[in-house]
Length: 447
Image 1 (cartoon, rainbow, N blue to C red):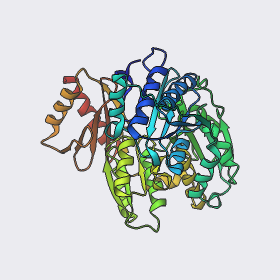
Image 2 (image 1 turned 60 degrees about the vertical axis):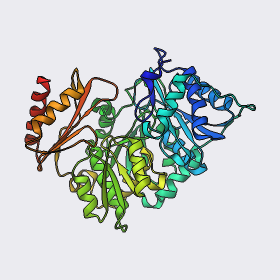
Image 3 (image 1 turned 30 degrees about the vertical axis):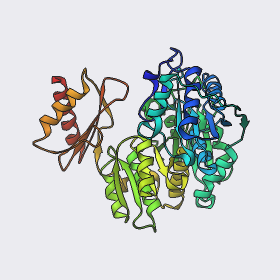
Image 4 (image 1 turned 90 degrees about the horizontal axis):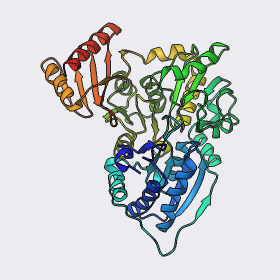
């Protein structure tokens, strides 16, 4: 048990094979969660990793010993936990390591109503109680009740996107042997779209490829499938299915910024003055398109707990991140890969052009994608970059270092877990982007 290694900015995550994250730590987390929230019930879901049942037992033991009841949702997508938390006004916990390899696991936590718990909203307090080894023992322990949340979750999705909005599309989906497969066929049973599935059977060993569609090689099987037939859309889910990555009819991936722009246009239609939250790494096209659609763009830090908090503060209708997290006010401000998929299918069903053409309306700039640099001292390296660029660009420190030249910009952020700096560059064309990447690379080589 190593709390210092597993508490992150947005959640709890670490290796189970080394003992960093184990049932004993989860028991302390469960106890601390009940104390923090003074709740008498907690909804708990889990992914299909081989370590998840044992971690569930530890978490449930901590919750019930502290006197609260556990609503056991079983193996579900993360956004099904958010749905249950929002619909039933109870705190939630999801045991998952999302896209990480099989030897990892973790816990995502939320307050009643699916409100986030991150470092600034309760996670630091939970960590302190865990490090103290505090166990709360109630006079009367709580109970564990098994509940099927998937049926209600699917109904909830279709209360937001009307099935009649979706036409006879052909859709190829790679479930990555993660949690999307638990609900996907129930979703497609309600709409006239045709599903061709890859790796829909949940398997915690992830035997076909890692459940991380952000890595291009993990999309290879889906791309190959799409080239064998005619498909309107490709979808790849990550391990816990809160993120969905999309491919157009030519099997080309869409960036998170492209999807954010398309979804923002749909959600702002007929709703002038609504707010859309985007993190500072999304394309400059996102706030431009939001403004053109009569909306108000709000720029924020990277990370689901920050996005959800800002959405609650501003009553934003939608939020999007470069990492393919999409947040919806109608979904308790929580992220949902499945809901993003349904919205995009509705867009395609009403469009008179394929996605390969439609995307061109919102893709205005060239981007580098995320590039990692190993450095020995991230703070010193970032100071060196800032000092080098301050005279020729505007600088802000909302999240990491953002340098804006007017026609182009870049953001440099330290990793939460490794001695890495993550660089994202955007500019008017590929040559300008490449020049900035090399400029930053040269500075970092001196650090």
